Amino acid sequence: MLTRQFTETEADDLLRCICFKTGPPRAVGVEVEWLVHDLHDPHLPVQHHRLAAAYASLRALPLRSALTVEPGGQLELSSLPAESLMECIDSVAADLTAVRAALRARDLTLTGLGQEPWQPPRRFLHDPRYDAMEAHFDRTGPAGRAMMCASASVQVCLDAGYEEPGPLGFGRRWRLAHLLGAVLVAAFANSPWQEGRRTDWRSSRQAVWTAIDPVRSLAPPLDAEPRAAWAAHVLDAPVMCVRSDEGPWDAPEGLTFREWLRTGEPRRPTREDLDYHLTTLFPPVRPRGHLELRMIDAQPGEDGWIVPLAVTTALFDDQEAAETAYRAVKSLAERAGSPPAPRNPLWVDAARSGLTDPELREAAGICFAAAIEALPRLGATTEVRRAVAAFTDRHVARGLSPADTSSAPAPGKDTSS
View 1 (cartoon, rainbow, N blue to C red):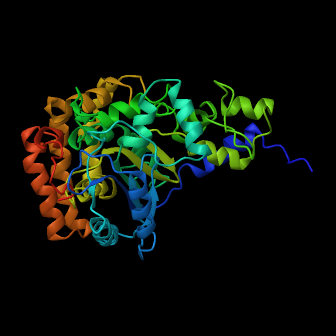
View 2: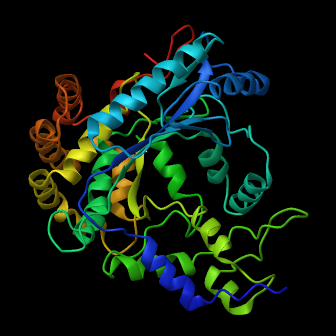
């Protein structure tokens, strides 16, 4: 029996319907990625059999977060949607404590850096998806492999916001995410090394993600209505691969999803194909009903991930802080210009210069101060507020990113603390 044709109109309507689910901002989530190193000598590559055995033991732990493994063996914990900032922090922190203990028993440790500082990218997972992804990215250059196998981040997930305009409306929050996003790149830049050398970037991770593909890492135009812009962006993005039961997954080079819908070749696309296509797009802010902010480097220290989570949540979900943040970053739009993030001058400067850039430093100072004022209203504990204040004093007030104040992991050092 032939499958009923999935039409371009249906795809467009579906994308507009699911990208922004509006309502009062309540839920918060976080996805924390980590590099995994040898506990005693992080310079040494960890053999795949050690990673496989360690991850098998981790899957037996009673975690609340979803545990997944990235293509290069990076470890990710994804929280459930939480009703408050502290609920999110407490649940993930408890899971990380259990994960760290299990890894240390196997002489492994989690490292909070945005990019693997020592080893070249090497793939741990081999399946049709990652085979197809690697082949696709190799057409552009080495950045795709570095992204897949050697990068790590803190991704903050927040509700889209109200349908109506205003500081907590989804349209304002969408625009804020793309301007404040550059400030977050600069403030939390933590990947100045790659393959044993210091690069010209505070966030080498952001530079890598920017270079993976001509289209796949880009944001849609911000001067268009968000739902229409995102739907068009998805449909006009090249298809990475057409899944099949036999043989490798590939696709005609340059085939967009819109063209696939219109031609029905190499086979008719389905709703499931559209869902899969969405997972192959990596913009800095991904609308998945909620907003997924993907631009923050993994942070040093066992609890370093808490600071970007707390700051970002405060600047989006506290109305007063959101208004202050928007005023602070609104002028950055002129500097960004018309190119989409992360390829515009604002985002490139944020990744390269971090908070040594005077304009980004000034915006960060205003935003972090607003976040510190908002955190008590969000129920943040004294410990969390102190962590944000300490980061502000050490980095933001001095115009420094973590990349400027930390050193590459040294042999004999537990890099998670």
